[in-house]
Length: 197
Image (tube, rainbow, N blue to C red):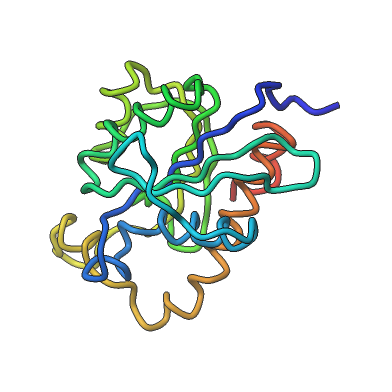
């Protein structure tokens, strides 16, 4: 028996910064994962009328719940406004919101899935928590590791993946997309058992 909730709409948010200048940055892994999920759903992102976000609506599996993939059009630290607008528009409660984001405290190539928690200095999560009025939403945390040497954290997250990491990145993105699908269909516990490394 699945421990997945029974609501019919999930809002899956890829955190990142818009535009080609940011596309390859570690901070944009959430966008990469939502791109993969959109590809699996066979639909391109399009502007949403509720404002400042691009969305894809559909299902990740036959007979599965409705899913809205979303990417804000504003910067990472403004993620909460578009997320709140979309949650209101689609009538999605925080326990049916999934944020996909980069995580400094996890090694590159690994994932952690959890419900709730702090923002750990992540501006996108802080903005979401503030706008939604709670941190009790799901997180698919894609590890990027800590910056090497004395490199500033902000410079690190806003820099491109290394050559070695770029070779491994498609596997991490595919795993994170699989984790989102699992979370929605099989629930948190099974997903954590499968993906938390």
